[in-house]
Each structure stands twice: as structure tokens, then as C-alpha cells.
Image (cartoon, rainbow, N blue to C red; front, side, top):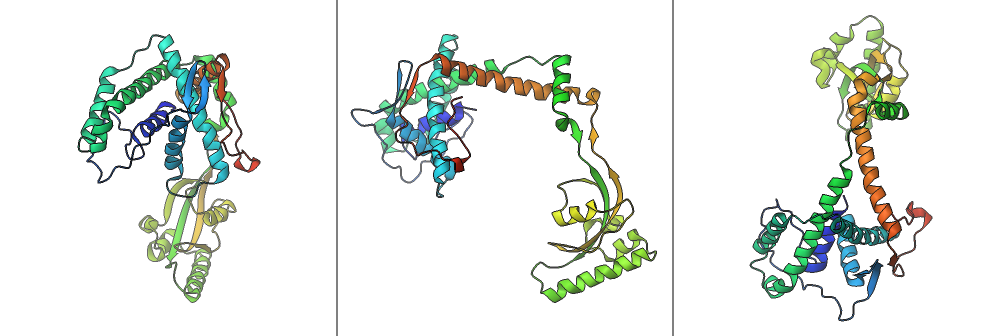
Length: 350
């Protein structure tokens, strides 16, 4: 979502670093003990970008970037390559915000004045004890109202553009066939386990003793002992009461060492002793279900929903791309850090 991000930046630009954006549903917060001085633009503002005939000041960009950087990196050291990418992301978001607001006006969309009023009232309640808010209120409230109204316009525009119809049977089936991996159930294994618990901080001798005990249990099982009986007597796993039966599991549910051991087994086979974080274990493979492609008749509804979501995103991005193509945009990137191959990102204009 573009606008919530932009709105956060707008609040920072207007109210300084200690006045955060509040949603309409956000309860009033008590005033913080101290509020830093609000940042004011210089008398002659440098221009960061010109979008059609609308200028975005360097001051607005700087405040937007400061807010985005603080949100992304908290108080940690920001990697230079990621900073470079974020600089361009913030600049593009500011440009897109101007374009989308203009498009919303062109389509006759009106801001939700009631929601905006509620948000302004939230600010009033939150900062009523702040002398600084009271001094700056006459300047801040009109500007903040405008930013919130722009946010409302773009939210409505986005909702309208993304409201694509549910796709029909033919495109849904085509999507299903093109994305088989999304409709394939992963392999599942039915596994039983005997776990000999060992505290991770135990000395080597304790771990070795547990491994020797595990090897002894394997010999008993291969000599005819019943796995469920041994699990109930010796296992520390929560599955012990069920004879060690863990049921069906898919890849990723077990530790890597356990998964590797099970991958080597055929149905009914026992693993060797496996050392895990919580102790020493041995596994028996009860059954294996191969990956299963879900038939279209079962997957149709999910496929249609995924395709609709994809078409919704495509519709929104195409609108932004069209507006960028149709509107002259001049952006001053002279202060940006250089993008490097190491960043894994490149300059792109959505």
C-alpha cells in the first residue's frame, strides 16, 4: 500500500520527529514529556522534484526520508546499499503520491471528510497539553488536513482500481496450469520417534551416553521389540503416550538433521541415532505420501482468488506506470548515494 507510507512521512514533515501519524481508530495517547523542536523549511525552499506543474520541496523529501529510514532501520546502522535504494523508493513514492492525488481529482473522487475530521480530533486530543502544538496549530492543522484528505483520495482511488471482477473459468484454468506448484500438496511422511532428552549444556560424556543408549534401543527394535512399547517406556517426546506416533508431517516441520535421516528411509525402516538440539532421537518411517497435484475441481476457487489478486495488483501498477509515462517528472537525485551491484536493487520507476 502506497498511501499509509506516504501519510507517515507527511506527518513527520509537518509535525517534527515526535508527532506520529494516528489512524482514525487509534486511541488518544498521553503527551510525551518532551517534544523536540519542529523542523521548519528554509525561506527559499530547494526543489527536489517537479511533477507536471507541482513541486516537491527538498525539505519535504528530507523529512520523508528521515521518517522512512527511522522506520526501516530503527536505531541500527543502515547499510549504504540499502540506504541508496530507500532514497529512490521514498522519492518515487512522493512523486506517485502527487500523480495519484491528481488522478483522483480528475475522476471526481471526494475525500472522506468525516474520517479526516476524526483524525484531526485525535491529534488535538493527543497534543492538547503541548505548548508547541498550540503555538504551531494554526499552521499545522490546515496542512495536516490537506495531507489526510490526499490520503483519503488515494485510498479510494486504489480501492476502485483494484476492484477487478472475479475471473472466469477459462483464465482461471490457465492460471492453474501455469502455476502448478501453487496447487501441489508437498510430500508428507508418517513418522514415529523415540527421543532421549539431553540438556543442550550437558558435557560431551552425557551426550555420548545418550547416543550409546539410542544404539542399544535400535538393536532391541531390530531384534523384535515393539516400537510403540519402547517409545512409551523410554521416549521423552510428547508423542510417547501414543507409542511415539507423530502423525503425518511435511517438509519443514522437523529439524534438518531429522529430515535428512528420514529422507533415507523406506517404509518400516529405522534410522540411525540422530543428534538434535533437545537430545538424541531415532525415527521409524511408517508411510510416505508423494507430492499430490490438487485437481482443478478442488482448486478452482483458490485459483480464481489468487488470479483475481494478481490482476488487482497488475491494474494498480499499470495505472501508476501510465501516470508516470504521461506526466513529465524531473527529480533531483544529486544527493542520492550511488546504487551498487551489491545492493541487489536498481533504479526503477513504477
